[in-house]
Length: 113
Length: 113
Image (cartoon, rainbow over all chains, first blue to last red; front, top):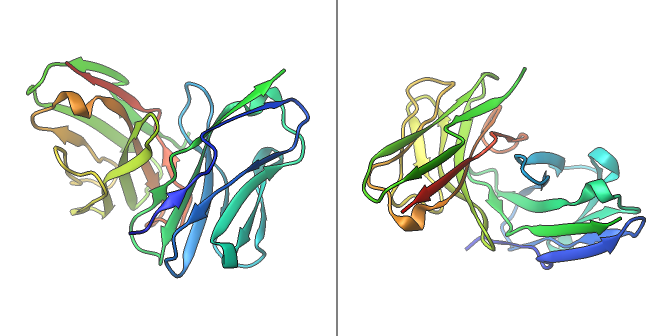
């Protein structure tokens, strides 16, 4: 079955630290990849997406992600986090352009001021 | 303003009492979807619709019904709610299928006692 794994359930960092959140997916052919963010009390919003082309994707608020096909990974990065990045982050994958999108279980990120 | 709206935002009900959660989008999107979010489980897709009168099951459809009579509306129906349907529900829409950014509603927190 197709699946999406996020390795870290809860991450705590200090401001200005670098961030990398892992996302791996099961083999499934062509993939479209997404990272969503959910700030406390708010709905999900798109951070970035990858469909094709340059595997290094830049999103909003200084986030980027790298698609590594050989590792089935799409890790999210930010060189220097801010307190306002405290949120839950979800990786999501669409396999083979079918009609579903599968979300990972999410990573709660807590930034210490 | 482009948005997805859901009503009600909060609902407490009793086992077996039918309820409907409404979802409406004003972006002329073809694709709409319902998710439930549970701690430690992330987002799981309940049902989705590719267009008017076209709906299909997601990963956790049991106990839910949907309809898509108009492009803008996609209500979620719980015919006989049970306590295990206590959850946070999100409606989402996108321009077409899942290759585009999904826009999420603000969520409906449902408690079934």
